[in-house]
Length: 333
Image 1 (cartoon, rainbow, N blue to C red):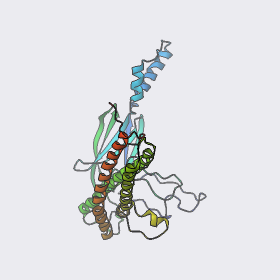
Image 2 (cartoon, rainbow, N blue to C red):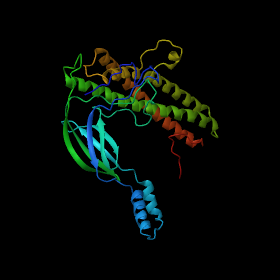
Image 3 (cartoon, one colour):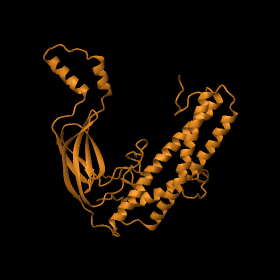
Image 4 (cartoon, rainbow, N blue to C red):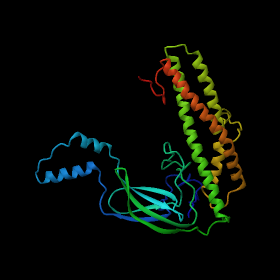
């Protein structure tokens, strides 16, 4: 297990400037070396290869029929999938690689899959010093297995493995966790709440966009707007309250006043502490997680109720002939 250090204060060269020479170390982790005899080719690649062979032999090459072209257009790109499991057979991580032939290597960084939303994941530019890519929690020392499969046309076919290997902790921890199961349980709870909170925040953002569009649609519908404007106004205020609970007081923050910690602040602290250490969780991290978990439950319930009312408001817009808004199905007989 390895947690990278930042001896210059920040990632890469820190603030030492571009004239300071430094080169990145190779990735650290479990290195899997594999050899693929042939490319896993798409239907288009196979067709083009067959056409070239015919052309080289001076045989006639005909334009493919439209259904064959449609299958080519709709076919997903094949790929290789490495699956890492622990001693109990539970999946810890999936690693994806191109389905191209040759002798290659892929590195597992001893971390679980990230629980961050698939869309909108932050990836810093090469010269961006602050922030970092989304990562999962550290895996515990122990025995793991890796297997290799190929994905082609919706089917995952085993190719090799499973092969066992050991993950060991470096003897460089000042305060190592003495109760590894308790450590693993806590980081798993933090990851689970992060997943739920991230999903909720994503939905909250979608609802916010819908409400903005609804306000415009009400103004443009061929019917009196007053009742629906009031409903939209009340829903927006409730949504603003949930936003404040989840993400903090932006009104105070913009004016540099102190603001109470939001649910995201508290969980972010717990995650920031635990994602970079193999020590036992601090009491502050535990307290922040417990408070975040307690505050999140009513916020989630309120957001679900708002979502139901936004859907109902959309139905009323449809009855009154309002323009289309995101997430609203048309009624058609």
